[in-house]
Amino acid sequence: MPEKAYIKTFGCQMNEHDSFRMMDLLREIGYDIADSPEDASLVLMNTCSVRHNPENKVYSLLGALRRRKAARPDLIIGVAGCVAQQEGERLLEREKTLDLVFGPDNLFRLPEMIAAVKRGERVCATQWLPRERKIQNFIPEEWVERGHVDGVKAYVAITKGCNNMCAFCIVPHTRGREVSREAENILREARSLVARGAKEIWLLGQNVNSYQASRDYRFHQLLDDLSQVDGLERIRFTAPHPKDWNKALSDLMASRKRICKHLHLPFQAGSDRILEIMRRNHTLDEYLAKVRYLRSVAPGVEVTTDLIVGFPTETEADFERTLYCLEQARFSQVYPFKYSPRPGTPVADLPDDVPREAKEERLARVIALQERINEESQRALVGATQEVLIDGAHPRKRHVMNGRTDGYRAISVRGEHLEIGDLVAVRVTGYAGHWLEGTLIGERREAARATCPVC
Ligand code: SF4
Image 1 (cartoon, rainbow, N blue to C red):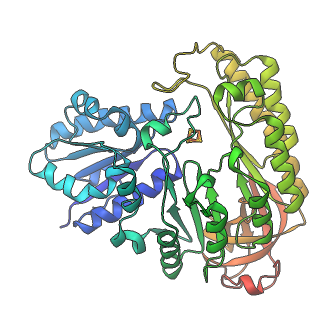
Image 2: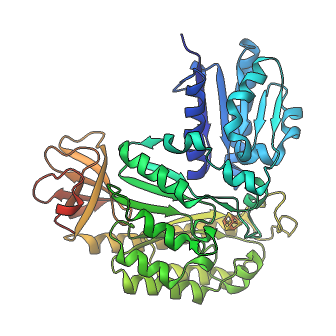
Image 3: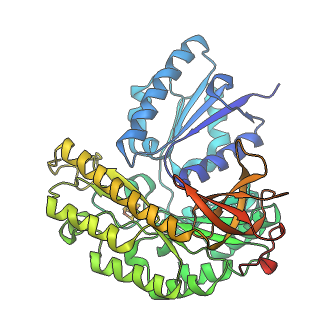
């Protein structure tokens, strides 16, 4: 019987991508992937320290595993990702049941690290690679054409690390300085993913649109080249930074059918004073001008965002600028967070001076306003035709499948013989909660962009 490994992933799509790679590395050395930690002889936690909550969950899962290891001493426990990079040896010292701690630059050494643990060592691998090796080892040559296809979608990491140093963010310390992967390497991975069934590719990076493989080859060229990969139906990317978003990128998104009309553009705060303390390097007016320009060249584009309420020194007047931004930008989805200080960030020493009740009240106002905006935009879509990529079956209803519109709205689609991977034209008939509802127009056409009635 093969041994089984379980990976618990916290945080963002980059961590999901890294977990898929870890699963493939573990399969390579004979592990099957378990559905729960109870079935596994190896448990890895791929961690996130961007916010307080996921980090707390790591420590509570570690507590549960400590008890399991008392009953099963051969259980191997490892921590990867941002908490591992941040804590390193301290984590090994603190958690005596831990066998393995490794950061993002050491991911592809997983097989040799597991072998060392099996020889009785406790391993800590958090050293950074020098820049050149970091680029070469971004995805090692032998793994380029083995990226993971998850249903209709696949992640492709294009940058690693971040040079921005936003004042609230730990990522530059846990992922290091930014490097961009070679373009040909990315294109080769994309072609291979498409050949193995991917219809939609997500380009990943902490600051995806600062991608720059050489002086003349930047994010714009990469997107353009990817949009010409045969058989690739959709391209998404996350997360771009507003200061690096420009008119040329908006124009490209408008002109290339395969680049989805969805931009997730975090604005974080509406007040210019707070944006300056956050070191975001743009003003609210600059942000809104970019959104307005994109909407002017790509009508119907959906914009989503992240924001923080209760940042140190945020006054009611500052917060009202955040609400103003919501009203102006009319996002289709907002991911709001209450500020909590993260150790090691530039603002960690500032007094966390917005009371908890005020943070909660502001968060509730953001959610209430966004619910209204979302309801209005959903209502406006009723009767419209949307292109939908079918990505799963409805859990209860017969002849109904789930999918995503080009703008990344979740939609359930009624229609005969629909299958996962179909790209179809759908008339929006209504909505329930955050889901649109629709019916298939005409016949099912298998991933048939060229004959899709919307195109
Ligand atoms: S752009 Fe700012 S928020 Fe995003 S990863 Fe870099 S430092 Fe963090």
